[in-house]
Length: 135
Image (cartoon, rainbow, N blue to C red; front, side, top):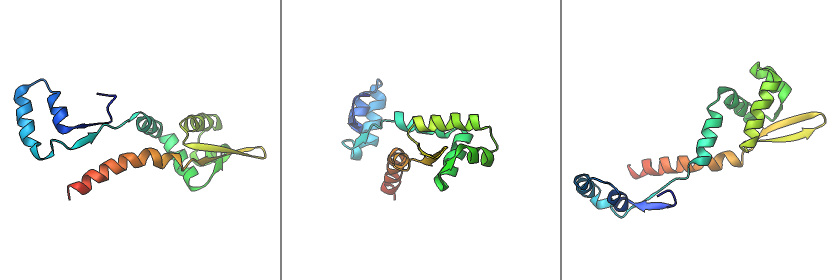
């Protein structure tokens, strides 16, 4: 089932083991039995959430979303060691959430705004699309 992009509710019900359960669900979803359910690809989004679940990384993201900043300023604002900040910035950079620009002897970190919305918008689209359907 992981290779599919979508499946109808009826097809999903047919995958169940219990015939008793199948009949009840077919009745329950009768009007929507042919409706397709998109099976989301969650690897990138789960990766994003795991990276942002760390309070320090989240704070870094929130700061550089306001203004691109070097490690030395981030370190003072967050009150953490520059080495620790650099480590977290590298993780954020590996996930393509931040970009770095070298200006003189400083590495200025900025939010990669093009990447964050792409990953989060799909989640919000699914959530709000479903909410709007229920109105």
